Image 1 (tube, rainbow, N blue to C red):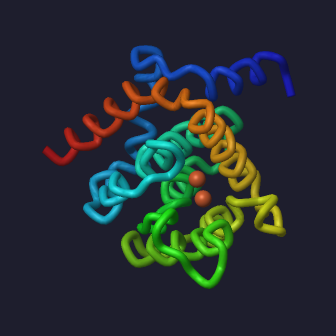
Image 2: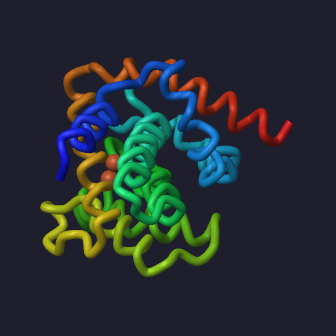
Image 3: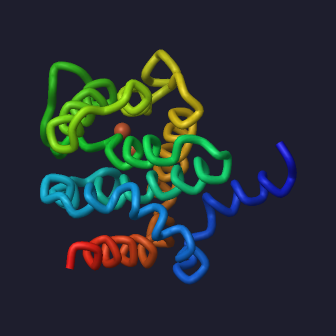
Length: 185
Ligand SMILES: [Fe+2]
Ligand SMILES: [Fe+2]
């Protein structure tokens, strides 16, 4: 891996300056604007992920980082960005709602089910990305490079959440939602 790409990859996970990141917004929204504008997906603003971060914010954060990394490495941006945005589409508050299985194992299956109900059939790669995003808690690692990027982006964003630094992404998050809405108006 060359040094320039490595620096760009680093930049992808730390730079959330709205003006500098604007160049990514059109391409990102081409892949996921329909999901962002779907009322079921919007429900995720009501569910807490970590700290005060909503599942909605977390999912946009993860998928935006994943989008930039997949673009940088020339991987399958369309499949990967959609699956990344839907990886936590489980639609319940895991602090309150309990299942027979622990949340860590249960929620990827529920996210995949909801994704298929609301957005149609997923490719094999997308299914595997969603189901394995909790690796290494999920024992089998992701089968694709896009899946490895998703699990990495998920953990990076969780670290931002736990360090209470996710608000760095807030201006960009608001801009993404605004531009997604503009597409239907
Ligand atoms: Fe998850
Ligand atoms: Fe996640």
